[in-house]
Image 1 (cartoon, rainbow, N blue to C red):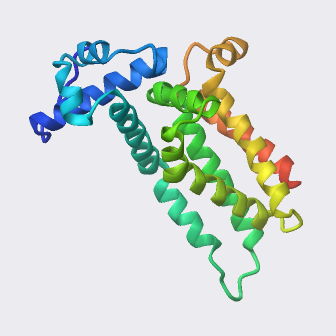
Image 2 (tube, rainbow, N blue to C red):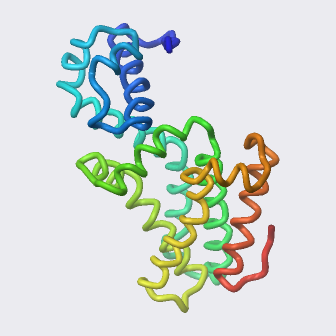
Length: 226
């Protein structure tokens, strides 16, 4: 598949982008071991030697793919995390911390559902799932770049929304909540067929978000605002 270069990218940047895009799709489809550099170069429509030139080899390209994934996720949800972390900072004279935390947690879940519902997340979500099953240095990269921060912020929000929960229970709550969102991506074929959806548009995404909000309210023992 030919790539459309960005007008402001240099020739070298265009090549790097094409290789990362092609590698993301190839690794997601077949896994690291089953994909050759020649296959990736052919998909990117560049000479195979350019993989060594830009990335030092297949392993370097694989890590570059995860660097790109991390940067994409940071761009999508980083600003929201900044906002929620500021909200969690101690504020004297404020007695609405639980309500604010609940609202923030709902917004963060909305953002994550939107990201997972985006068709563009398919290849990199599949790669992250592969790394979850057999972690390599690539998993360490994505965990440290964004996963740790997302999980920590969600855990803090759960504890702020329900101060009766200790840290271990809050972490388990976050894991259970994430599972409800991630299923829309990792089990997409079964989900779509069961829901009788042909695609996920704004209407379907809103339904997903509303359902997660209702479940969140139930988990926290609060009235549903969805």
